[in-house]
Image 1 (cartoon, rainbow, N blue to C red):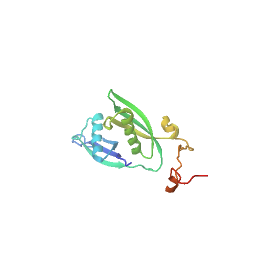
Image 2: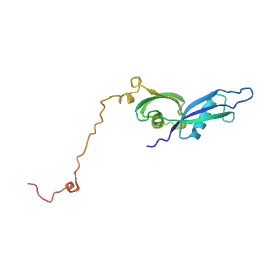
Image 3: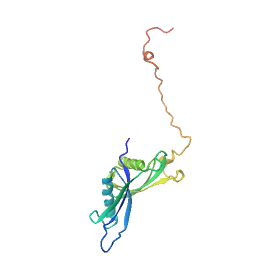
Length: 174
């Protein structure tokens, strides 16, 4: 289906003041459905790690990042931190997809399905492209086979035309 997520690069910093004319710039890669949410998530994360918020800072640029080669299947390793009902946990998961955004979409669906975690409780720390030999998870490595086959059992033979579909023949066969 259509992908709701996009990957944005958001760059921001403290507003320049008299005593600090060139404040440190911070860059984040954020997965979000649109730019507005990406900016919001940027401030959410930045306020956690640096003493800064939207009123004391400024966003310099927001750019969408696109996949360099979206026609080739790749393995992605995702490092995730999430809040469950009982506490905060770290996770490493692997996905096969053609894009980083696709892999992260799979991640959110997976977290919702297997861990009952809402997207708002998930922090994607890092998404790396992983070489086939470095993949750890069996559900990914089982597809690393150049001779992989997907058999189709129980193929039902159907009549080629409507007139051959009759259950009872009007003539007795000899």
